[in-house]
Length: 388
Picture 1: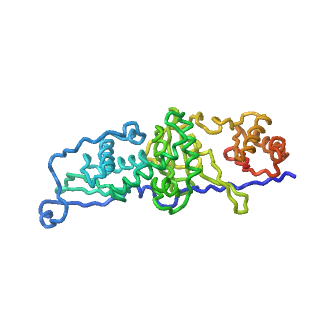
Picture 2 (picture 1 turned 90 degrees about the vertical axis):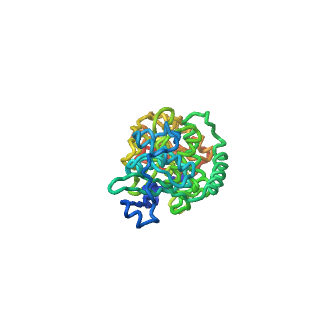
Picture 3 (picture 1 turned 90 degrees about the horizontal axis):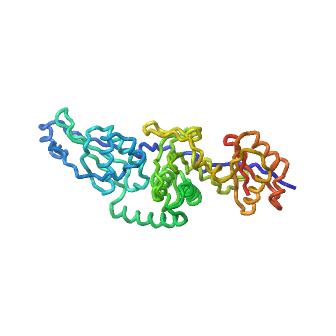
């Protein structure tokens, strides 16, 4: 007798913990000096340097980065200055801009372009004024560790990353790199609200417990190692703060949410099994906007290509009825003890497959001595997942 069991999909990480991602990106403190006489009376206050600004040459290493490319010239210059200071572990620098909004936009863009800056958490700024005139703006990164501790931690991360990326090459196709990283994070990390260092890549590579910000930073970092550009997107999903990624694959942009790729299924009896949900690996804009709402500050591209879609690339997108073709996919998954998800082009086709393989039990014609069908029926994505 064939036993049919409907399994409930339980995503381990539906959304981030309530902490505001933007608060993580920016912390401000202000110190103002307002006139010569007051400076004399407050000798301990910082003194404004009103000499012409002479900044060292700052490297433009971020040309080609997505968020950097969305900035104006003045914002890019501030970005270069702040990023160079962070990379060099400088205590403070004078910025070429006096505009707080320029500084804020540039710093936010750094966080969107670089997922590996685990040693810095926000910044402090100091404004110097002479009378009513603003004469200088100072930027001080807020470091969470010393430069020596940073170097030691980086060495540990490098060791893990080298091991994790041992199965893929920078010479491989972009699709293979993206799929590899997506599966890598799903298989090696756990979503744990409140995990230590959950807002940076330490939580992913060294403790393997993180939340959405950690996942998004790790995606950007790992794909960057493989030559695949992208950016970290902040916003909300299902009513809570969330972070995910914009990625460039074979010349087209897609959205990736690796947090939601890491999921599990259960049979309603409290037993769960890891399950990779590929719906969120390479989303179009239309698919992303079903459940995600990005912040409006970063101008995002319209993603419409289906070339990088997992189901189409893997031959698991069905546009016509072919029982033997579907049966062959099920037989292969059954033999390997793996789950397989099939996406259908229309509801009628999905319903036909459901009736034939599940209700009428014809899955047994292809899957040997199978005695129980574990499945998930997803109406929103027009999918059936067979869980062996």
